[in-house]
Length: 461
Image 1 (cartoon, helix red, strand yellow):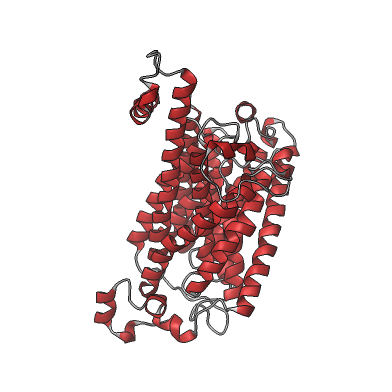
Image 2 (cartoon, helix red, strand yellow):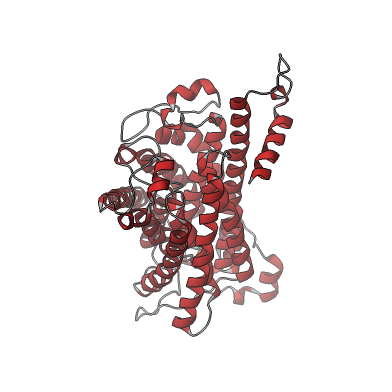
């Protein structure tokens, strides 16, 4: 850890030479050097979180059919671009700007200057430059939107991504973000959500669930008797690589949320993150082996992601042994809820609600059980959990945050997507879905040689 701080210090001096050669040649002031190191660390974390978009592209493309692979991967770039513009114009100010306990009302069309910092009291505690904080928070908004798209997979019109991408980034995501992270009413209640099990993952997953219900199942997913058919993804290797990238990116997600490279706390958060993910992988694979009689790789991948989602809220509040327990439970919960939703007629192609929604709920509630007094004191948020003698108070606050956030996103998404369904339509035609979105929406296949070699007869539902 000391070596990392030294390396960041050297990098800070290279990037900010005025720190090393001041007017009085006395070297940088400690607070200036600390601010430079913290700024570099958070910028690096933001880059890791943005790189998670590559993980989502590979995971979703690998988990869907070959005829849709190019579309699924390509829309990742499109939607992050849409999110960036909308978040710059309105989302950042609504989420973190000064205002009421419900929503921010300042800081729109962010100009990247420190003079605008007076509009963002909720972000004032950290010495990281405001422009870096913006990029970091944009990365989080982009992840939440990427999660939402899981419910649209393989059957939504390309135009839907434009419209809902803007509306989610402006009208949905910033509201809950302000409640919990922007100095809103849930922050005042002491809601513990260090890096976003509720703010990022539950929001995105709830929107995905609404989309899944309104779009209805893919062609061929269910028989007339309601029995589901397996529609396997075309490339498990891509899915595995995508999860590895997401696992790595999560260190920026969680450890980066410390907003500081000083001391060893960001390393502790990274440790908890990793151990939870490891436990989720092992637990999900074992339970799938017991359930199916075979060790199911997609179930293991979902276990990793579910554990990472769960530990996102609690990584700064729980001891490492608890992180392992939280991750293992998340992996098991996700496996069984994914089976249940599929049998219930909910066609969620990449299990977005099970992985990010159910695990997001569990992760948000987990601090109500496991939040340790010493870590609550360090973070200064909320109170200790039930298992440390804190009673039901923190668990109640966590549950309140989960329920209100879920209801808000559910209702808002139903209104927006319902209106879109009536006015512009959400789903491609049956013929376009059979041919595949690569060809029907973009005019070419992601795998042109393979699709041409197989012929049109291979393009089945």
